Image 1 (cartoon, one colour):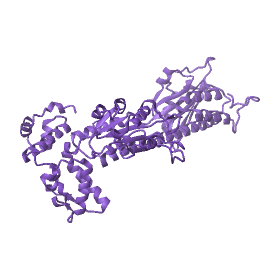
Image 2 (cartoon, one colour; image 1 turned 30 degrees about the vertical axis):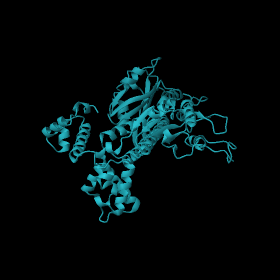
Image 3 (cartoon, one colour; image 1 turned 45 degrees about the horizontal axis):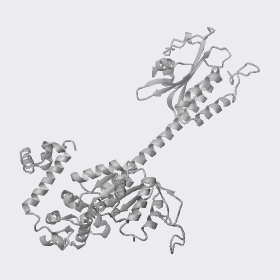
Image 4 (spheres, one colour; image 1 turned 90 degrees about the vertical axis):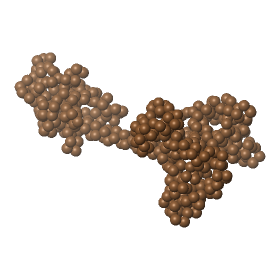
Length: 522
């Protein structure tokens, strides 16, 4: 042994003789990324320092009450696999059970030594083998054992050998517990990050994008799918359907959530300023440009940029945007140096871009670059069943905003909302509910609180749109389709959810010519 016996006298050394050993083990632990990978080399250091034939680190698995060899020196892979013990079995199991170290001068005379690893009980010189096993504990909890076997030497002071191994075992145990603590902290932070991502995404979906119709469920699904990617998204839909909220959900559900989301309304910026707003300008680029200015793309670096009303973008700016999408670079107005950009583009429009391409007001190549992941948001008149949910949401929102105390909306008022065509979509409905909440005098929204446009068939555009029967049938058909979608085409469960018999639901399915098989795999 290097450190245990004095090289000059050949007698045991005391005091701090183990310090070089502990220092070297500490270095291995601190320099390792994965503690498990360092353990075999640490066992080799221990064996070399103590002159051992073998050194073993055994770990207790409390879930299955088994002790197995985690690392070792002087032992084969097959021997390691065989070295499994129950608590109380053999010397190793007894040390784990009692928490007390064991020193055996000569293994061959020890009846409790079960030798599961099938190691030789003699050295090459046919000398007897000694065995020492100490518990590894942290704060009174036994984690496993540290053991060595070496040729018998009468000069060995077993108390000193046990002490050294116990100190080494404590060092290893502290490292294991500290590493476990760090791993638990990493897992906690990872879980918090996942929870935050879900919270951010759910916050925008659950609190702002309201709806339970089949069409909106498809939108939710697409938002969740595309959020996890870096794909460019083109959101299509009429004005007022909530395209900006969809953008929020995509950005805050992505890996870019902690970085900026910059929003630009392309129709609201004068044509003479749009290039400077998007890409910035250099000092002196034009009259009045007295200093350098960063554009929206630079401000959105690492995050996302939302280009609303993309169909209104001038042709000369469309060319520059195409370069950003293709080459990931741009130049400031008045500049010559290309600037690299890492920004996800989310665009939206209520225009028919296909028609715009035909009349020459929108570039076809830009259209295909933007249209990587098209996402269509349905108009409110296409999801009438969502109106009650939306109304409840907007009542709560209005109460918080204006201090009103609306409890509910009357059924007759809901009926009026259900037959209106909603040309302004969600935005119009929200404004309608906010106004009605202010006008209500009895904490209930009633028909007289609704705007005049909803109170006459002429002004609401519903006079020649069908009879009451046809409108009811339209709503009924949509309700059946939504229920079948929810129940994956299960007619029995759908009838149960709708509160009618199978026969009645079957008759209505036939009446509206609904193909149930279409909804079995939705």
